[in-house]
Amino acid sequence: MRSPLIAATLLLAWAVQAHGQDAPEKSCDGSTPQMVACLQGQTAKWDKRMNAAYQQVLKNGKKLQGGQLRIAQRLWIVYRDANCLYYGMGEGSIARVDAAECTRRMTEERAKELEGLGR
Image (cartoon, rainbow, N blue to C red; front, side, top):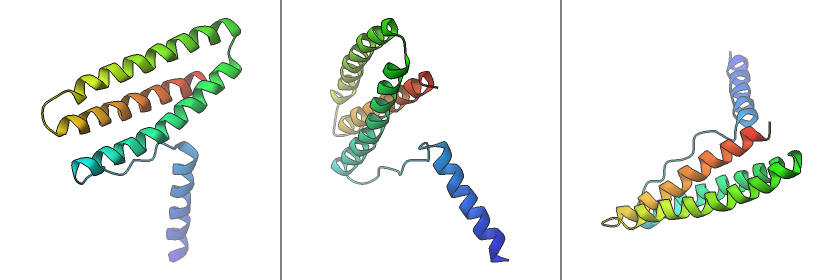
């Protein structure tokens, strides 16, 4: 009877690995500094994916589109940073968490957008 359970577990692990690096991220609980550090770590992972997707789109795209993508990406980074700074300027220590979550969320969304362009 353990054989079907092992097979199901392996199949699930394979499916998560094959589809995504989109497996649920761990919850960032704890003190404010712990939550911010956790969110920054998650952002770094999404940033790595975003940069890989960006490079892939540049590599596969047309020269004219590549130039426009460079401009758009630079402006997007400025926008993301300014937008999330707004949250960071809020009241109390929760503002730091809000800003870190904003950066994580926006980076994740942009990574997925660029990955979609690379398909």
